[in-house]
Image (cartoon, rainbow, N blue to C red; front, side, top):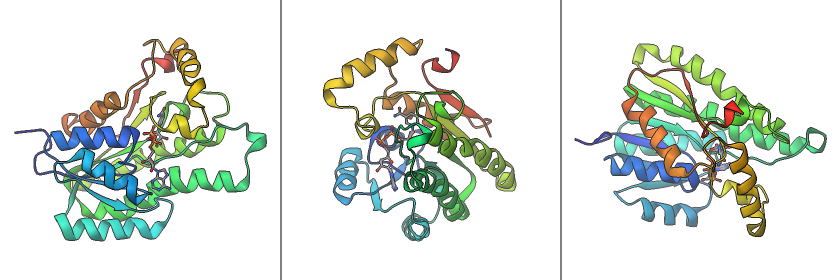
Length: 248
Ligand code: NAD
């Protein structure tokens, strides 16, 4: 018996980085994986790569009607959900003085509102004893340069998750937070770090992280698997997976 046999799991932002690594890990453990992402062609490629009957639903987590459409489809296809991993997120590094109203709204629409309304739409489908994982960030608790807006949009995860853990207690649904430190994913390219500057950036990060390197998506996937399937008495916690960076 594998850890997620017969379990239905939804992973938002499952076509890239941490989400895709987790989708692969969950699928290997027997899960029926449903991933979401914004671009159909990237989603299709990821679905193929994950295999094991994974399916993709394309849409924007910042659009509230997307979550209901996802819930309706998954309900129709699989009858319910066991693990909801609200992982999609964006980041733009900027000093607060440079943040525009549009940039502010975008961060909160994806990172904060997208998670809230995702849980609102999907939670009725979650079977008793299931669980929710929300992705926050080390930046929510550690002061990092130019992270103020992103940190604010992620800090809400801790409050959401702890409140939901109590709201859903009658159904024995656990709710936990996964907080990565710096991890090698496409988000670094999206940050605007040119390929040529990447080795320098990674060396700088390695200096700041007691582990001596950045994290790998597969290591975050392992932590997500722990929260989803192994940590059956773990509820309302923030699991920081950062190679010890929070200590420095
Ligand atoms: P990534 O860019 O590889 O993946 C982000 C995913 O979110 C992608 O699949 C993308 O399509 C999806 N996404 C973004 N905006 C969306 C929208 N509006 N609608 C639907 N999907 C959307 O990056 P990642 O590093 O794998 O990030 C995953 C999560 O981890 C994010 O929440 C991120 O903030 C968080 N995180 C990452 C790091 C890191 O260093 N990589 C550190 C801390 C936290």
